[in-house]
Length: 185
Length: 280
Image (cartoon, rainbow over all chains, first blue to last red; front, side, top):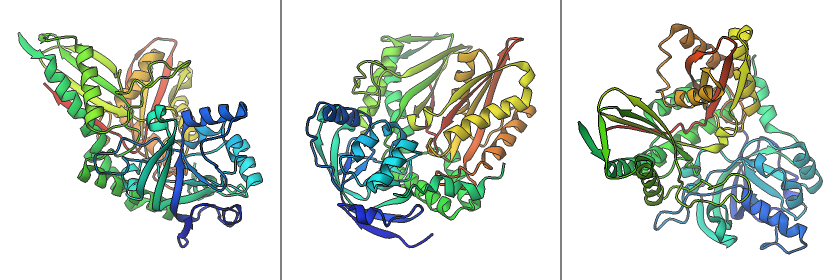
């Protein structure tokens, strides 16, 4: 594997457009967690012409619903959830200025088109590596929708959060590239 | 007649929820290590390293292996000579789930109604409970916490007898290839063959409770398990980002069916194939 790239948030479009499918990255800074219910609430708010609780410009969204933190810990186990469930909401959210998404699994063609248009990178964290990933999270603060429990919109302060670029802003897809050499059916 | 107070069941179930969420079973851990040794993709090796390390951290620090601590599924075998006292068995089990998920800092992932309101029940209840009455005076409780990243990728196919073995292989492979990188592979694949549509689905779940190093007792089904595993490991899916370790095992359970039918159901489990067992 190539050398690991260190990224700090916010993630600019210029930086995002330099990342390539297959790149290993370590992310440091603030990222924002939101999953199914928060996406539904946010896109409904946008449809009503309302402002969102945070400015998503140049931010990274992490598709996550963590376990509750044990006393003394900043967060519980916190691996990625399936990104595809957010596809229906994603083009709308990317138009809000998001430049990075962290999740797991494949994305819809409409999402990839919107990524190319907006210069967005989709990163995969290892699904099910939730206790390991928690080691890179230093702080977890609920920003909005606390009533959604683990699905609340929250800010995560992360240091060296491990991820891999799976779909880059040109639409190159490492899920496909990574599988092809080992497909022997 | 032997008597068990349901309070004991509540306490055991609570403990089992925590155990299942924190401690990856040995057979699965060993299969991951073996997969790491044979994995050909360099990225796949990195992913497996993270998955193995993750399960070690979870075990050492009593932390959930995955943030999706699942919907709780319980398989009960109740001895017909056993007397349960002290309250309602179903309520006692759900009290155990609520206690385990709360005390264990596990994520509460169950909504009371699926379509219109989807309000979280806040304690991961109700559990899905399958009960079988068996001879004897013991109570066997098997519990799994089933994550939905993988559950969403399962499927069922109502084949006809003429489809035969090749039809079954194709049906399983189609479901797996459609699931692809999404259910957090390396997967454990549960296959249910026979029965009715619902029975096949049940058998595919039940299959996931078997130790993954143990093959089906029936030699033909054992061979089919091996063949399917080999096929799945040739899909290229690998440990999420491509490679040769797509699945750790295929477990098949089968049952009698109708002269006109050949139902095949597949339940996919992620690499965190979690369960706990008690015999009271």
